[in-house]
Image (cartoon, rainbow, N blue to C red; front, side, top):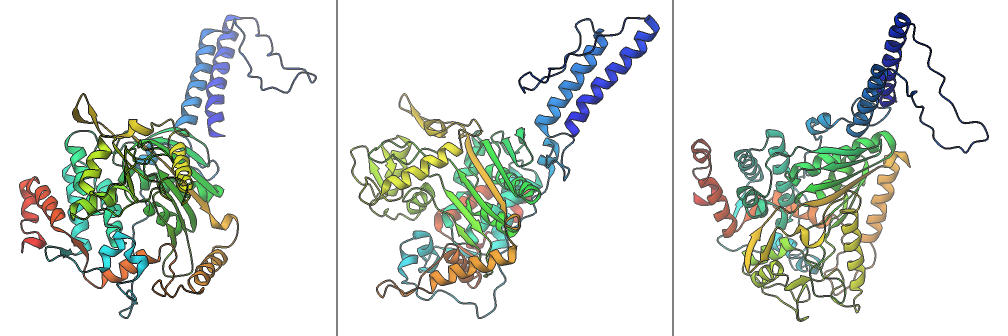
Amino acid sequence: MRVGCIYSAGLVAALALDSAVGSSNSAPPSPPVSMPSAAAPATAVTPRLPLQAPVWMLAGAALGNWVGNLAARRGLGGGSKLDGLISEAQFNRAPVRFKYKPPVLPEDAEDIHSPKDPVLKKDEVKNHVFEAKPKSTCVIDYDYLETFIKDTFLKYGCTKADAALCADVLISSDKRGIDSHGIGRLKPIYCDRLDIGILNAQSHMSILKQTPTTAVVDGGLGLGLAIGPKCMQLAIDKAKKHGIGMVAVRNSTHYGFAGYYALMAEKEGCIGITGTNARPSIAPTYGVEPMMGTNPLVFGMPTDESFPFVLDCATSVNQRGKIEKYARESLPMPPGAVICASGEELTDANQILDELVARRAALTPLGGAGHEMAGYKGYGYAATVEILCAALQGNKWGEELSDAYIEDGVKKRRPSSLGHFFIAINVESFTSLDEFQRTCGQILRDLRGSEKDPNAGGRIYTAGEPEHLAWVHRSNTGGTPVPKKLQEDMAQLRDNFPAKLQEKYRSLPFEK
């Protein structure tokens, strides 16, 4: 409506000016604009100004049309409850309301039933949470780590708001026991890329297209850790006004652990869905060449329990973050997750990382290689995410997303321009939030209460519960474990800080 008013104002001003000048010059009146007859096809007709219209009239109409089109594209004049649009300036300035705050736990909060639980043992992240740590590992308080991460991003030139967002995304991953996407990625995924200029410290986003329920955003190769929360916030705001909101993003970068965005949505009474493409790692079923990213497909839903339902997993058997973690800890990969060009399995984590860059190895999709365990299903899900992260917003895909590649035998680096999508569905557009939470919670309790396999540890989990248990455990043990390699990363980052900031971190916790 406002866009139409802007156009009309320009046209009316031009007509008024034409009338005033015409009266003084006694110019003949312009003929009326012809309209289609009732028998004509029902097609849209744009009124045209007569060819003999004075130049100022044409200029005024053209100006009104240009401003109207610009307003429609950028959402200028929007932001109201009526149209659900937001201007580009508003979007870049708008605060993100979410900050991850795990539930406050009673002193007698339940810890893990047994460290030998097979559900936790099968997942190296959960295994790392509950197993005994090497002597060189140092448990560091969350607040200390979060402040360190924030100061690091500020040192690289991020705004205070963006640095706080980036720190919250990373430390939230550690709080939930997802060590593959927490502080372990601060230096290799973000700082190292900032150092060589393939990632921008400040994230100025452009709105390319917008409707009351959708938006297409260009991230300008800024930090995905800041772009992601702002785009999910926009999707949530649209959903709260119109029932559903979706934002597709191009030219972004790694946006951290995808479950963060599902948590954002469920906190505001919405169902949250997100996905992102990534550097090519997964081979199609019956293939050996890495063609798709690990492409997580993530869902989050509010429940009446102390933790929400959050399904956050890659569409591959394993993903790069976990391989990097195995490499840091000098551990072998489990068999079946990676194949080489000859179709053989690889388990050496460092070798796998090198072979992925050279495109001589690939991750297997969920279900594994071939069809015996239905690997084509994981392949199909990975392809779905790839399409939704490239085709909707005009983004790159496949090999073009490789930030490290080999050309003429030389290893080179370039920006990895990723695509994401964020969907928020307002539960109260369908049913009451209380009823949804009760039903969702009861479904999950029924699943956990069903008959157990006597050979499998005696416990059934639902999505989001192991991460909740990780928080229970870590909150009772003082923080997150930081192994030797990450300690070295922190010390190296500290040594490159300005003098005043170096003094703040003169003695890191593991150096005392």
